[in-house]
View 1 (cartoon, rainbow, N blue to C red):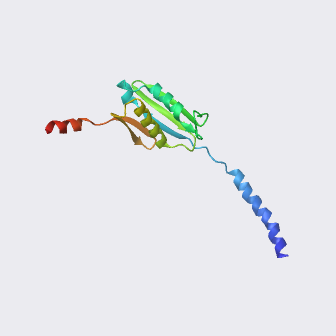
View 2 (cartoon, rainbow, N blue to C red):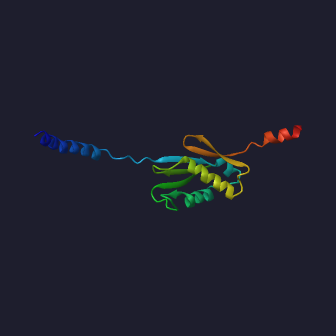
Length: 142
């Protein structure tokens, strides 16, 4: 008898757990990252459209290059002298991966010697020049 009662109660508990699982759906989290390249674009060193195209060609989604689809969108915002590249991606996307690709672009175009990528806040990067003036003053003193 005790065994029958336990078996009768089991399906009811399992049914309650299934109802809870169906009610909860995963929210699609979108990450928004900004790469600010306005200082470099105004100086005429970097072309924002070329950099955007580079990112579209190189970003991997599910282990495949050029497979952006709905998961990643890349747009360029140009307003006056400022140029920002906005990357909106689905859940598994790393900010560090954007830095890696930015550094790879700089190396490809031989700009890595005088430019570097710096995080300005939690969701954005910026291209900055290396501070070379301090080194020149030190060399002049000797």
